[in-house]
Image (cartoon, rainbow, N blue to C red):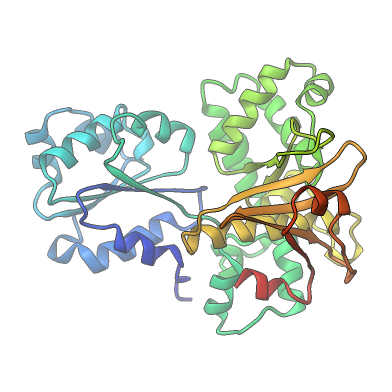
Length: 380
């Protein structure tokens, strides 16, 4: 089967040859290597067989660790387009990339990383003003429809996305059976790769924390309660959650608050970048129609798909949830162009009215329900 065309590729290509490093981050197995090899085909010319540098290879790491512009250029060889894959494995890669971009501005370097934690810590200060950053997510519904040659998604395809997720090998059929692939992905990546970080001293704690978070999607998370349940300090929970975020497994949604005294403004909600990974963590692959958590899965699905859409379209807007102490709530709010837009996600086809407390406090806001009858219009 052909590769899936990624929407973000166009934005990446418009950022090339501007005298800056292009950073592409995202989870493992999400298609970063496939994407950069397509870029190589288009931009590396006769040098395409030599411009891909895999940092899983020790010799490449060693050659890139020398902070000498002449030796670095000699290692790269001829050409002006180079890909450094899994760049976070190179110590001081930020300094190395700074040397290259400052000394040889005509060269285009594309660096990828599956660990934002490891890569961002190295590139932050050295590459200020010298880079464009992109995140490659699991496939979006728009990318899936284009790949399938369809204008929409059939019911069974949507149900599969909520249970099996949208990693490229899941969608293209290369992952067969799907459950084995998701189990491998979660066991080999989540509980081995991440446990290799120095900050993860207790892999079993990581596993238990992820399972608790998987059961709490759509709910506010109390770090104190998690700490009590797992027998560790709140600070440990926060550190592990930060690493899980930087590894593109989970992300946080923060509460919105401006006016009302009784608005809740401390707890966050946590969602998963991919629902197949989430379901693998708790080993639950039941059909969506029979599950008690289908509402939470639908909410997670809509929010992560919107997150993909916002990046693909290069929109700039704040994303939040809203809740009061009296349990009035809105699943999701976007803040842009001076207005607030409220959304409630319902797996069942139900009507929805924005809480009057919210409308009174934020006059001029608008809202709508997102369900199976209109989600594609909202997301595409």
